[in-house]
Picture 1 (cartoon, helix red, strand yellow):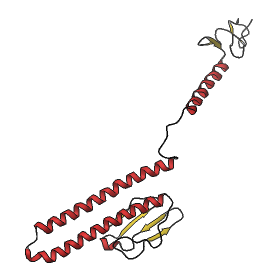
Picture 2 (picture 1 turned 60 degrees about the vertical axis):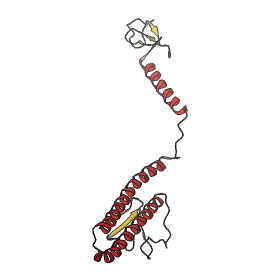
Picture 3 (picture 1 turned 90 degrees about the horizontal axis):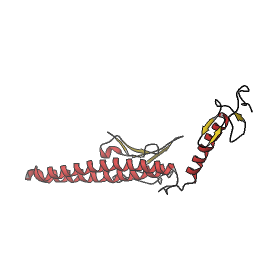
Picture 4 (picture 1 turned 180 degrees about the vertical axis):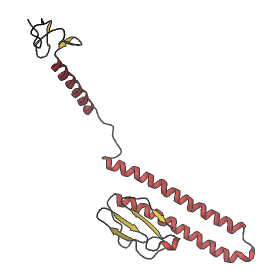
Length: 198
């Protein structure tokens, strides 16, 4: 019997899969069987498919969310919480500094004026902190696809928030950011972390 690929060479074995005769140059010894080149590629493909099939058949760990979009949303919210927490800590530190200044560094004649001024500053900082928390929640709602009510106001302002819808984004702005000493306080669906510009 002669080799299928080399008619002048004697066959030493038949392919275990397609049974064509093979010479020593054409025979591929794979484990306990001899295969031709084409059948070696087919076996490798079968092994790869079987391996991938086993991966799909394994039970997947139960995730906290049902899709990747919610995982991304959760990570963005976590980053947003960190930013909001930092802002609130800064506001708290400012309030403590103002209170300390008021208590230790004012003379008795200045106490009445400084007291009312410091109290107003603490109230303003408290309103700003509440406003930022509200904007943080609005940012999360925007990412989830919800818009704020048209009559929603921010602490320290009687005017409703300004909602602007564009083709690919929704922006919510504070109507009177100057009350807090800023030119702009806003949040958007594309950036749900409150932004403040002086």
